[in-house]
Amino acid sequence: MSESATLPAPPRFRHLGLTGYAGFLVVAALVVSSLAATAPAPDKLVNGLARLFAPSGLFTQMFPPDFSRIGPISWKLLETLQMAVAGCFLGLIFALPFAILATDRLSPHPVVRTAARAVIALFRTVPDLVWAIIFIIIVGLGPAAGVLAIMVDKIGFAGRFFAEAMEETDPGPQDALRAIGASRLGIIGSAVLPACLPSFTATSLFALEKSVRGSAALGLVGAGGIGVDLKVAFDLFNYDEAFAIILLMLALVVAVEQGSGWIRRKLI
Amino acid sequence: MNAPVSPVRAEAGSTLVEPVLTVSGLTKSFGTAEVLRGLDFALAPGQSTALIGANGSGKSTLLRCLVRLVEPTSGRVRMLGQEVGALSPRALRRFRARVGIVWQKHNLVPRMSALSNVIHGAQARMAGPQVWGQALAPAPVRAEAMACLARVGLADRALARVDSLSGGQSQRVAIARMLMQRPEFILADEPDASLDPQTGQEVMELLLGLVRQDGLSLLVISHRLEHTLAFSDRILGLAQGRIALDQPTREASVPALRRFFDHEAAA
Image (cartoon, rainbow over all chains, first blue to last red; front, side, top):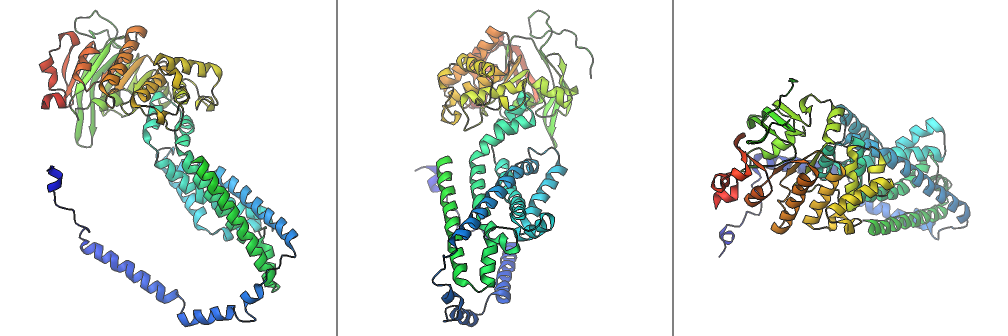
């Protein structure tokens, strides 16, 4: 019998200890208090759902969906897709330098690295609707504000994942090129980026999907795209037309997700 | 620090020559752990020197200190006529371009072709995207890289991804990348460690060929006694961070060498 066979089986759980139990209690208290303070009462929920399906309720009035304005809605849908593609493209382009500056091994100085991480965190933390309002003030109503809002949001999203991918690459090839005398840019271009390509591709495609979903909502604050039509339909109680818009948005999002999934499977 | 170096006897029994590498009083500490404790030695050009020692004796740290991939704590390194410790960052890059390093783990860029990895060696003297890979490299660079691959016997695998190559082939690509660098001095950190005995022998023969045919200088960390004896002109033995053995290979006694090899000492 081998020596390893005589070893005792490891315990299923490590003993938590006082700190572990205290931490567990804090998390449990947070979850319970959050549910108590914010979760809906079951009776309210049931009554509300019943109102939705009443003869004069929202869902009842949505059926059947009204596709009579499918032409103008389709153009707006195309504008939404264009906003998403343009904003995502710009966001990914600018995310790369931010991510490089935020990566331990590639950043030229710890202060630069901290600043880059702070900018990425800020861009990620502020909701894209808030960015849209800010850019509407700067460039006015319309898709340009939406593109800029998506761009900033994507710098935050992709910047973080790009930086994490670069942190996780094998340092060996980079050390080898550094030992050759390669420049920092040379190391990034010939060792870091090729190694990160699968991860960057996956992140970029997720960013595009996120952009398409987000760009539909940006119109609600006047930043262009199909969201404007959706808001107007609700404001005018044209719930059947609103439902048609929602279905077309769903079709667009599903198409983009399927397309990006196909590309991901082919490339990675 | 910058005092001129007078010619020294670089190898016992040799004629007086200007050393290609002079190490004086080199120390390296990591916190309170003193890894290198005042090393002094000089190497003559055009020779193969084996650096041996048990695990943790400081061999790899010494190699990295020579090109300041690890900064020495104190002491002096003069290599290829330059005071390494006094080099500015830009000058250090130019200096490193003259020193080829062969790594135990090969350290090739995965997902890229053998040819692209070899082209990376040109970053020692060229900058910009033209030396980031085969797609952007100018024809002369690609031709030189192909010649380097041919030299290590892998011209027919130029377009293969390096993560599809065997360990021995990967190490050959790494050596071709080092040749692309046009080095004057080779540092090799257990280049045969992860290879089977036959392939390891072929890699060592390849490195020794560069010494004999091209006149390059080689300092190789060796973990195999038979390779130490077969592929070196001189042996430096490290023990507890100090040079404990320094003699021509032809004068080395096998029993005296065994204590520098963990597995040999244990046998």
